[in-house]
Length: 224
Image (tube, rainbow, N blue to C red):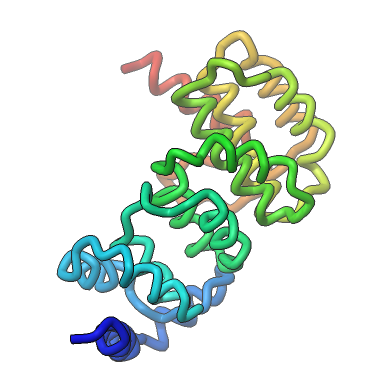
């Protein structure tokens, strides 16, 4: 079967999985597909890793196809410029998040892209830079200017667009959780800016309000 025929077959399968109720829920979060993610993962498991199919699915521009592409690709096979272009095309939250978390974080180009994206004027692109920075704060903080990151958060997070604000807030919380020497300052910044202070949090879940988030995570670790 030719590559084009395979793509057409996969696209038809995804169309058959479209669920109006799933789409309605997703659209409330800014996403534009109606495929249950469990079913999407089952398709990916059957297809296994297929890099060229992944590229072709991505090229369709369809969000469900792009999510599937991110599940069947080889993250290290993408070039730096290719990943940069893909991120700038990924405008819906779920595609953006999966691209960063499932692909870019596993790429040898992750650090170079982190630096470039962090300084990008596009807030959606910059949010990816902050997500990669949060990963480093938690796992490889050596060489990061943590006081400088806190300076930026303090100056810019309050008025940042939603997705960028969320990513900066996550980084703020991660600094407070992972680095005791900066904890008091991180909590203080969160308390002054009050970003996500009133965010509706389901029972049993941790609030994204940085002072509460930091406090709960530190308490869990100390109680472990």
